[in-house]
Image (cartoon, rainbow, N blue to C red):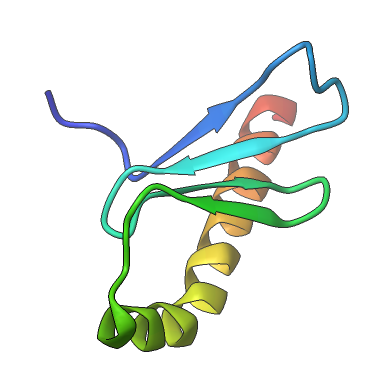
Length: 75
């Protein structure tokens, strides 16, 4: 099965949270309510440096995806 790059998530236990799941490497979930990120990958020291460089871009892409989805629902 081919998954989309981003998926919106919801959970009634966290009524104010807005989750976006990134399904490609490096996989993560971000809570847009507080920008907390949980990585699903294990990183070695080399990977950690690369991820730190790319994390800002990935988080911005997740936020842009959310904004796009909300706009589509509003239209």
